[in-house]
Each structure stands twice: as C-alpha cells, then as structure tokens.
Length: 114
Length: 117
Image 1 (cartoon, one colour):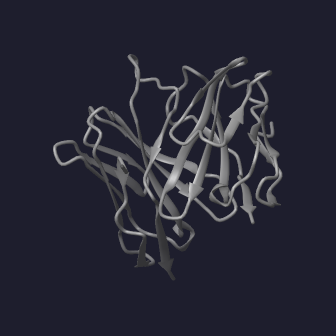
Image 2 (tube, chains in turn yellow, cyan):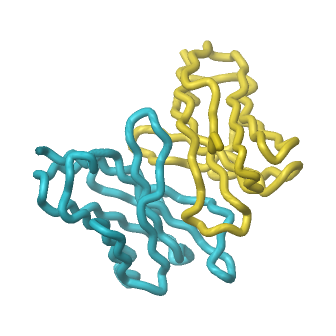
C-alpha cells in the first residue's frame, strides 16, 4: 500500500512551458484534491474531485486544469507556466464519506518557474 | 481574505516545556478544526482535531482547545520534545450532516516550532 504518490519530486520550467504533475493513490479513495503551499500563505485548494469524471474548482484554480478518468489518478496540468506558479504542490485523498481527519497527503512536488 | 490565521510564524521552546500554538478564524460556518504537522520534504500529516461541539480534545501529549466565542483555537504540546520540531498548520472546514466532509480544508499560514534539547 503506497498511499498517495506524486511525481516528479522537483521540476524546473521556463515561463510558457507546459507540464503535468502526477498524483496517484491506491486506497480506492473517491475524493482527491490539489493544494499549493506558498510562504506566508499556508496551503490553498486548487481543484478537487469527488469521483471519476467529476472535478470542481477550489480557491485558486486559475492557470490549472484537472481531469479524473480513473479513481486512482488525478493529474494537475499547467498549460502555460508562469513565475507565480512557483510553489510546492500537494495532492491529497480520502473516502468521500470518510472522517474529515482521514485525508492523506502526498510528499509534494516542488515546482520552480523561471 | 485569510479566513484562518496563525499570527506567529515561529516558536522556540526548551525540551520538556509546554509549546502553545495559536490559530484564529473568521468564518462562522467552520465547525471542524484540525492541526497538521509537516516535516521538510514531506506532506502534512494529521495530528489532532476538534469538533465545534467540544471545547477540548486530548491525545497523549497533544491537547487542542477551542473558544468559539473568540473564534480561537490553540494546540498545547506537553512536554515538548525535539522530535516535535516541525511546521504546524491549523485547518478548518465545514462538515455535512453526520459530521463528514469532502475534506475541503482552509489552512492557516503555519508556525515553525523548534524544540531545543
């Protein structure tokens, strides 16, 4: 049971490049989400999904796309990276009707956009 | 508009003493509060939580206090240990009937706790 895995761990992009941050979980969790962590801001919700084929926006969705074709995977796409997207990105998952505190976070992807 | 605030960016305490981390919130719809601990290069891990129907929850060395009228919660760690050195995030959410929630969390900025031997 690997839990929540994220790849890559580190990434450097140039402004305007695109990339996909991968997130996978093997716990059969329906709910998955993406957060970004910035200094002095805490973690902020980008997008979330309550099941395959269903996604919705969080607090800071601009510049990011998501899709959920399987229960296991929830990739986050940056179509045209900007320096303001330099951050640490965390994916999380839980059972949809599970307890609030039973949400598990991945180890994070540190992204730098130059 | 920061709905959850941790106004102390850092806290330094001696091993064996009490660590008190504070958190304030503004959204009256929040009814469930959590503390997460985060080590460098790792994701946040759940530490302790409290529902708005309680004013205290204890788990070993960790106790969370909730003052709803002041919209304030605090985490007490007694006694503090060097292994407690980490970033602590306060988070809040609104639960559905039955106490469950999708898990959309609103986080504070975090407090870096350093426990000196």
